[in-house]
Image 1 (cartoon, helix red, strand yellow):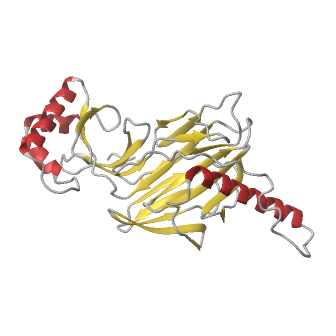
Image 2: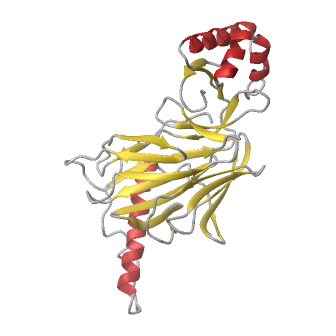
Image 3: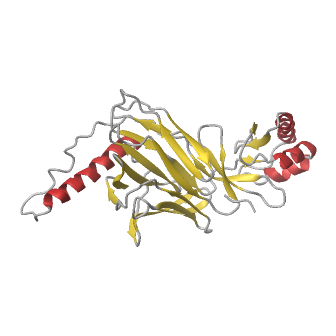
Length: 321
């Protein structure tokens, strides 16, 4: 057994400059002996939330409720049904998304410290100093996913972080050719795999809103993000892995055997087309175009891929075996 949607571009908003004094004026009157510590902690959480929300915007942050074991749980609806997104109680926990049918995807935060998550701002859960000079934040989003944000506070912060992917059985991550990954559910009885989630291409920005190069690589089920800071980088830097879960795209992936079938049988492609959410069956011309692309991919030692807009392409790696 092998184990382990409509895609959006990463957010590109300028980051506002955040004062280190955020939250320091909200306390007054008589205070307990540990007030300085409490005030500093609150200010740090508020500052971090303000900073990342300036980078991401707040329009798609989902409304959340607190529940046992989590500071924030969101109940969202997608084109594929309902999804419940849960932020972990601690920085070394796992962000999870579960569909109404029970299919679940998780992404472990890279926090080395056992730091409590606190909801602040518009709905951002912040884990301050979860790793060396690094805050982590989680934002459940309205489309059945979540952003997991790294705030690198200074040049002592590690520039490579590792996120463990918790994939359902018969699901795997495949490079989508655009800097991110499609999460595909393997088909039964020789059917192609269909995309049931996505990990968007990463982005990173410094304190002035300047783009910082960043990239992913996949090591087994570990998503590794590297941020290429430089000597002139202005800190803090925010970086964002984002995922969506649930059927939010109909992209099909064919392995080599299925690609061969696509060359040989228009009926096989017609049956595969029924897996793609859309207005109806594709035309004979469309099916012929898919078969032609399958033959091209086969000659190149690659595999067929058909996106949700019925456009065929070739790909390699991952499921193409």
